[in-house]
Image (tube, rainbow, N blue to C red; front, top):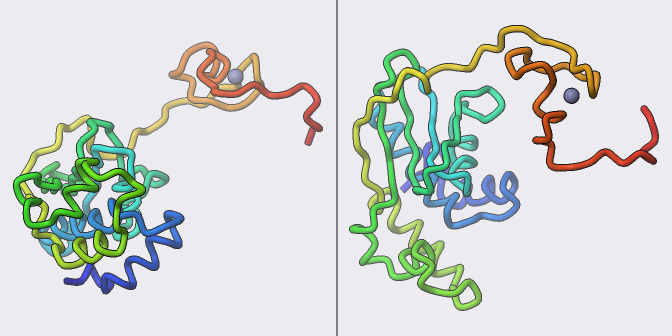
Length: 195
Ligand SMILES: [Zn+2]
């Protein structure tokens, strides 16, 4: 079964180039993206929501024009291996998830997905062979309606200059930027060369 316009092997190569290695989650995710997309009518302008930060966002970014950077892909960490593709004007779309009820035929997929097999004891070749053979048969797709607050990009209002770091930031964040409010996960070292 093809993954969009790619053969499994082609998608595996693209996954490795983009993601660092062809992770099982990304390969299974490719079939999930296409299972949801197949339900949208041809030519629908859609956006995506992914319910986990692991692997699955990259499947959406590899196979669609929805990306984190263009804000047509949102990651909302609900800890579930699921994604939604939806019409950006109506919010109507389709949610694909990896269905535990459909994994009994696939011991390697089940062992990996449920972490029943320790990583060192996994057989990556057999796991990938199962993912290829299973295709989209291990996911279930449901129709959903996305809440209006999650449709479209967030439009920034005004830009201000932070009085502490002197960098630009959205004025709606308050009197100074979120970095200077203590949310930046690093310290700038004083000995760093300027420029
Ligand atoms: Zn600042």
